[in-house]
Image 1 (cartoon, helix red, strand yellow):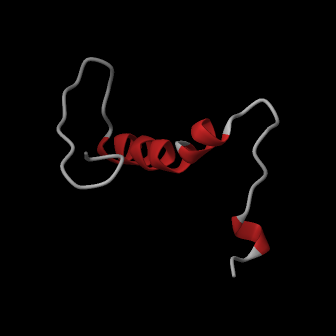
Image 2 (image 1 turned 30 degrees about the vertical axis):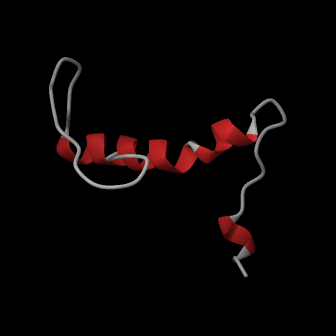
Image 3 (image 1 turned 60 degrees about the vertical axis):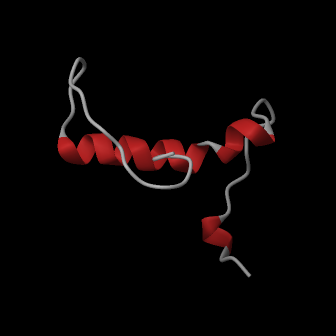
Amino acid sequence: MVAERMVHKLPDRMSDREGALVEPAAVALHAIRQIRLSPGDSCSVFGVGPIGY
């Protein structure tokens, strides 16, 4: 069972496929903010899963 506060309704205009990418995109954005990347900077991402694959 998942706590109600952890569930978010997708907007009607967003497909399930797009919704599935929200969490991985949020993780990537958080990482970029943590390491303070700027436009034009380069980095490498290693790991398994949708972010590092």
